[in-house]
Amino acid sequence: MLCIIAYDYVGEKSLAEEMVQDTFLHIWEKRNSISVTPAIKYLLVKSTQNTCLQYLRKKKIETQSIDTASTDKMIVWSDDYPLGHLFEKEIVDIVDRTIQSFPPQIQKVFMLSRYRNMTYLQIASILNVSENTVKTQIKIALSRLRTALTDYL
Image (cartoon, rainbow, N blue to C red; front, side):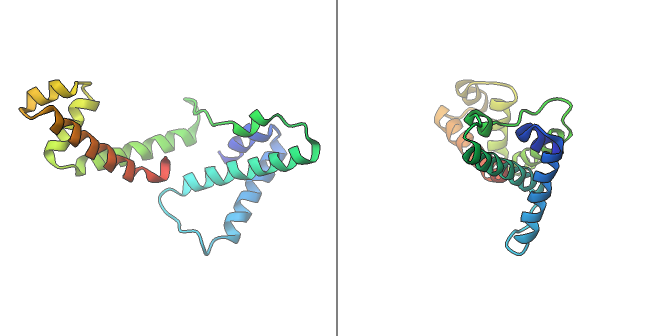
């Protein structure tokens, strides 16, 4: 999968493989200062992207002919992209666990807002609370989700 990502940047199979090898070499050299977390896939993807971007920047300096738009390329996850499915499942699991950890009232408010697309006013009337209470609880829920997903943002 990392070769596919690198190929998206450099457009050449052998060069993409070289970029991935360089990525693993760099990670190996920094192994004592890198902490392995559940987000190791994210680290590998970002490191591969950075290796490719560094290569493209160096090549641009040498040749002055690389279009700058190619260095700003973002990965577009398609339906047939296995690494995308892994990231999606991982993120969904984190979101689900985080929502389950919310206090019951915040959990209700968040579920009504995000999964049933209800307005703050509708939620407030159903739960018999003020609209400001709903806003505050949504803010707390989103803050906790943002914290849980820090490695992916």
